[in-house]
Length: 158
Image 1 (cartoon, helix red, strand yellow):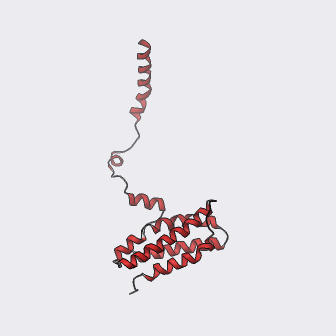
Image 2: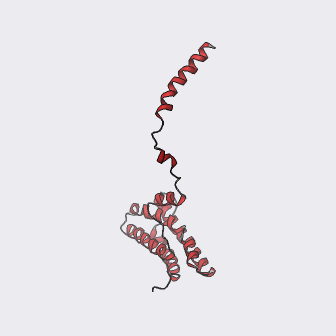
């Protein structure tokens, strides 16, 4: 029993400095609200989300160009980040199309185009990670067709 009390005292003394030191957080940091999911997703993607359907299509097109150029240059590793970004950005396109007030048929076409893009870019990403997949040149026609569908539903320029 005496031995058990000795070990309990040693453990208590060893833990005391940890309790006194704490984690050095200020009261302001401790009371700050938690980070929202949108903030985490933005940080994960390293870029802000598009606010409108038109911005999303423009953003996707820029990412597609980066992927296409990297593939044409034989430097597919350079397409790695844009491939992940485009996948993340595609998640929001249908929602933004709905917010724009497009009809059900248009949203269905956009949704199908998004699925086609996710599939195509997913194959390129898989190939990049040495898994069964496809080169960008093998899915380029599908990508072009899906982008034509997305562009078809852009609002008319003022």
